[in-house]
Image 1 (cartoon, rainbow, N blue to C red):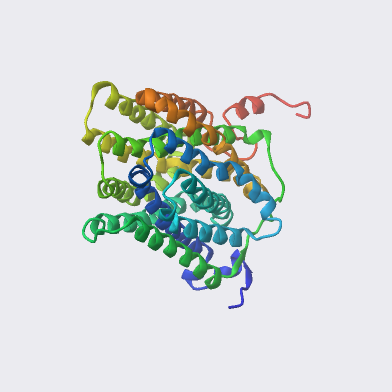
Image 2: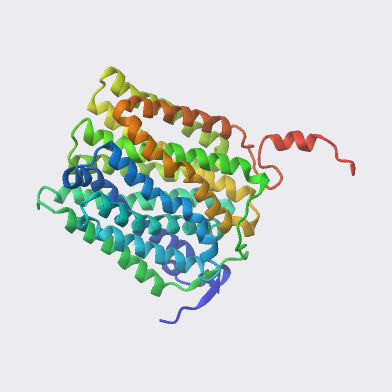
Length: 414
């Protein structure tokens, strides 16, 4: 099929299913089928098949985050390749690599396969974020991003629902599930490559590294977000398996509840961000996360039980869904041509801590699991302090509350 190139205005004449937003929704649905299934099985697979402890899981996640740290390489790639093409190629790589995960049940094998799957995941996420902010109108961005989160949650819901129902009933193997889920994601990427025209964004993107002083708060919030997220991604689910002996179908059921909650609440969160602003939304997220991480620590200090741990895990995941408020904050303050290069820079900043933190925390985990969660609470508090620097109505020239002080000082020209 000949792939036409068309502007966003021209695309409005296409059937709804072939428009740019439809492509964003379809990619948002495809990605979690492989990634969510990989995540759901990972802790049980590495403990049962590869005898991992906290140290090995820490190293695995450190290697998994290296491509995120190298996301800045996207800037070089988009000189030669359209962002839309790169997004679909990355989605294909994620699907293919996650499909063969069970073929390599050793530390070395897992590190290599995970690295390639992670290149696909992180490069897809980087470019996808850029395309979302270029293709979605600012006025509708919070609501639309909320719906995109809901669609991704629905895909995870389908994956996890099938796992819960079929894992024991059909005595499924890790290999079958990884091959199926990864294959579906890869197939959707191929379909999208042929079914959609190339969409031209209205503002040409700078194809060089962009670091602007006025984006400092966005960079700082991204750094803290990456550091804090690692503790949840790496150790919250690992705790459920290691401390409470959760089996695959039980971990998956927990993930299932997470995504039902996200599917239901993410659109409302989008409306809340639009109504109350990014500062209040992010402050609410960080206060909630502080309380949750301290309660995680209480599980080890006071021996609190599995039910509380499961409830905290679901709440934890729900609060993280508010993170798209950070995207809309950047969309409001950014120069239109900065979106693609800054998405790459932000992803790299987001993963600075992610490269060393899981391995370091793996060693802390085997001596003091509660210490890991206290550290996370401190990170959430730091994020809260930063979020309070966001103005109620951010825009270029008014990126932080400190811009008011600057504006209050008359310039010589005045």
